[in-house]
Length: 287
Image (cartoon, helix red, strand yellow):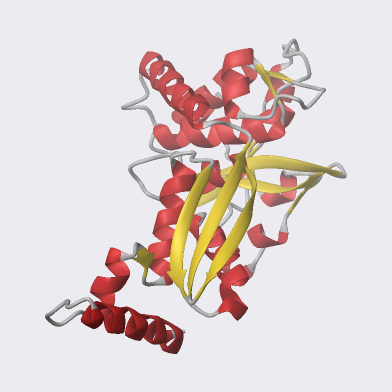
């Protein structure tokens, strides 16, 4: 890759000298002028910013080897989902699970233009609306001094009381859950993640299979341990079930008692399980 870049820069230097440009020109300075990202980390940061802000298109200029450019384009997108900025809940799991995919057109020689087109289930404007609405809801809840358990239970109860499961699965975002009062499992999980994160809790979105179908739920940390939480399955279809026991059937459960849920492999590795130590028992408090 460096040889390719150097070759291009030599051409630029020759042109510069021919045109009478004087002074020492550094490789990094030239690449900066050309708008070329110089490391993979810079590329990841650029893609992360675009995805977090909900941009539907963006272009990266990168100096590299043609053979690996498509893998590079995919890799920087995947790595952008690993960034978790504590100052926002728009990134990390929320960003990953409202993202549907990308297409990329690549052209150039040595220095490549990678033009991305991203697809989202929730627009930037909708995410901002969600942020504003959650801020209002949390202000009314007054959870600043609440215990971790109280925060989780209050948010869990709000979601299953105010949102119904959309059996058509046409609504499947946090925005549709709050705006239309109906969403499917991905919407429940994303909304739970964002509300708990904004309330100061550590939370993740987990995807996998439940009862034989693709599903999404959460894990949340209380104290030093993590617990399973599935607001979708705790919310009866139509939201009319007043059976309190059933409303907490999937609330703060250990893996052993979290029946019919199988995680995708990325959430079941030794590294993941070491980082997110699950409780061996259900959370004991019920009210």
